[in-house]
Length: 215
Length: 402
Image 1 (spheres, rainbow over the protein chains, first blue to last red):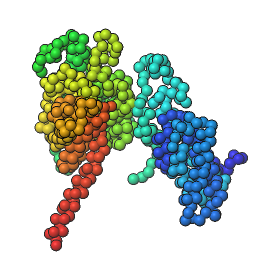
Image 2: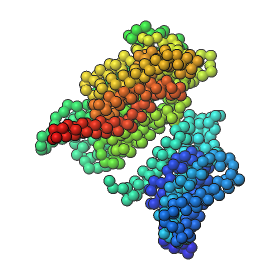
Image 3: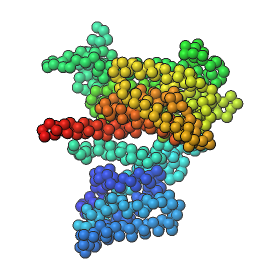
Image 4: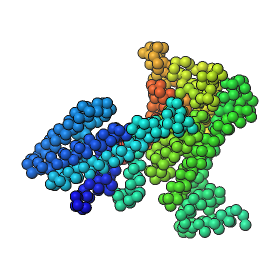
């Protein structure tokens, strides 16, 4: 490992598995429910959060010694808001339909608990480089779950992936639909996202029993 | 050596192995186990879980048999093979033509429901190493009775897997579930495959296949017709009471549901408080809607008029409110446990059922949604009933000491 030390690798990889922001810390659930009906918005959301959290962590970390602790939440909010507006404007300029699809949820990245959580828990007490890695790692962990949920919801709910009809055409009855298969309308509804996230949590904890909390 | 002895012998062999729970389930299902207790006094009760479940199944059997005949009858009457049945024992209803078509459609539903559900129970018992629980025996019987007769079997299988795993096993199996598993299965089907669970096609077998043909079969239910302000069509009150109407497989015959209710109440398995308060709740809501109509606040041009104008008592004869009240709301696991709680729980089920039925034309029948909703609130109701009781007694204590 030339580029990253062992500690740095841990910062990136831990949130992907055993310290995942969604499945272990159970943060950022709302957006995971709201925009994962399809794969494309899930990925855009994941990339946006990687950008906001990675950069935000660096900015906060750079300012960590000059932020008065009494107003630190306000400062953090301003940093996130600035970054989110950048993302929003870029999406509006270059991917207008997608930005319409994600509607308020890009703006709501500001309220994503993962971001404030990492600012508070990590960036305020660490140097910029580890903060950057921590931000990217956590955002990746968030993104991975989003993409898994989005994959299953789009595949089973609409029979498509990125809008391509991978299971056949439901109207002209080709592919799987010719033998009586039908899309599962429940998958498109938000409750199913909650259940899919729940199943991911279940699978993860049964593979790694040390994650199970004691009662 | 009989089967009983050889099973006992095999039990010794399986003792402690991974498959032991699966074997024990079959063993205890067939015979009384050969173990006796070794020390201490034990409470002797005739009604263990297995006997409770068997009584419920027993009370469901008339509905199932009627459902089989009715599935064929509704089909045959539309293609002109049989005439309208005159009375309950009419040979136009109880004949082989009806039975053969009905059995061909309904028995696969029963088989899939039991096969898939019990398979999952066995898998979970083997993985977790606990005994197979009897809870699914009733659920497996209820499921085919509350789905449309033409539902594709694979959809039913998917829904059963979902209902048993997400509705029950994740909470810890029989006795730990928050929601009624049979209704979880129905709710899953309803939201996942709405075209197969509602509308005017799926309730009579053959209606889906004949769409658009000159001899098309109508699969509309009374509720569907009322929701579109088309009135009761050709079904009179007697048809509704005896059950010669299209609907989910087992819920049409109000007469047989009443018989089942009597069995459950007399054997003290179903709570009469819940059944009664559910009906009272439904009647109250029906009365309110009748009042709204007679006040002239809602006129015939309103899309809710058809259902609001139904006489309040007749709400019990259409749709599945009676079936829900007797077999679903009384589920001892997901219902309220306290007596006062049972009154509140039941009343709200009936009240909300009729409200959903009238106000949401997309769900002409809201009974399953109302019961699921109240399942969620049942522990809350119990909590406040118990708290209230504690407070009342604490007050009494103060008066005495003062």
